Amino acid sequence: MYYDCRYISACEAAWRIFGFDINFRELAVERLSFHLPNQQGVIFNDDDLIEEVVNEATVKETTFLAWFEANKRYPKARSLTYTQLPTQFEFKHDSREWCERKSSYSIGRLYYVRLGLGELHYLRVLLTFTKGATCYEDIRIINGVVYPTFKDACYAMGLLDDDKEYVEGIVEASNWSSGVYLHDILLKERHRLSSKDHMILNMLRLNGRRLKDYPPMPLPNDAIMNNMDNVLMREELNYDQNLMRSQHDSLLSSLTSEQRNIYDLVMNAVDNSTGGLFFVNGFEGSEKTYIWNTLTSGLCSHGSTVLASMSC
Image (tube, rainbow, N blue to C red):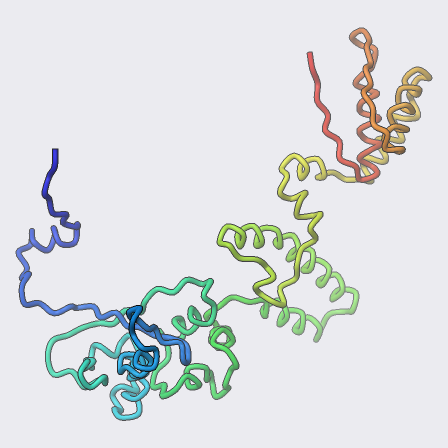
């Protein structure tokens, strides 16, 4: 059975329920495009001449570039951000320029840009705060300083998180603390940050990115990363080697001759990387578990990974 239907969204349904006008209405929200220098969006057909396409007014005179010109011509425009501009100005498509609005009302909305697009994303962030810009360089000026990239300008405005607070904390501590205390701070901070590297890397991988895409981000050790990804490996490596060594020495000294023979046989197979399958049989209470504890603590004291299991 076939139904010829029309879908009505929740917004339109609410609009109709309240009886608002649905004809001869102007859009209350105006989507504002923006782009990096010489990276305007171009739409063309397969048979269009490239020379004609790039010279079209929609390419050479975008709404974003027209904003720069409006800031040069109108003092009122210089008091508004790009997103606030449609509240006082309207874009004339025939002349490709912003003119003071005489009627109606509209608000601006910037197109969404994901973080992975880099500078374009940071440009979008700055456009929500910047007023009176007449060129791209003006957007990158923060407190009289021209920053080389939009990302650096975002950092200067405090719009992005970085590790400057740690550097400032160390500089402040250097004015009153001793060298030993500063050394301890650096070691603790370095260890704390390095323990987060694998978490950052895993989140980036989910979004198709890598730490190498964000220089000079330090890269974690691959061997450590592999262990961190393995839950069993991570749990088994979470022990104190000094404690294991002390426990091993105590257990080893109290082994019987028969137990010591089993211990030496297994440890030799591990040390020589020969491997093997060993079966120890005994009655309940013959201290088989005692041998396993001695072997486990001995291997763990050398940093080895041991996975102990039991079958009944």
